[in-house]
Amino acid sequence: MFNFLIIPIPSFTFFFFYSRFFFAKDKITVNAIAPGFTLSDGVLHSNLQDRIGDNARTTGRCIQRDQVPADLVASLAYLVSDGASFVTGQTLAVDGGGVFL
Image 1 (cartoon, rainbow, N blue to C red):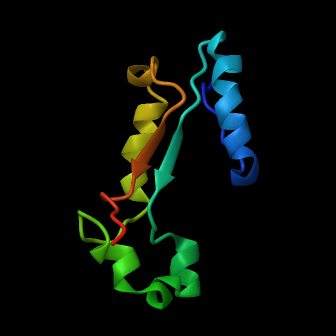
Image 2 (cartoon, helix red, strand yellow):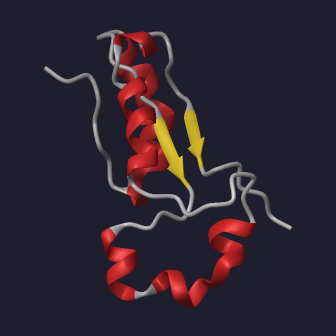
């Protein structure tokens, strides 16, 4: 049995805040990943990366390269692992050190 849930974004804030208390008694942690702009299949298919420009994609990050879906995998693996069994109610920013100038 998995100890994580995937929740749609519109209901996430309310769910995230209160569910960490509700599920804790069953040793289920509630955490989130906040990705930066990611070159996903949908983005590439719509050419969105060309419309937003380099600043939003790379220049506005400490790590100046495009983020790809694989960049999120290790973070997700950590949050669902036993190593994160005492981590709950947290949002992990995986955005290459995004800065807004």
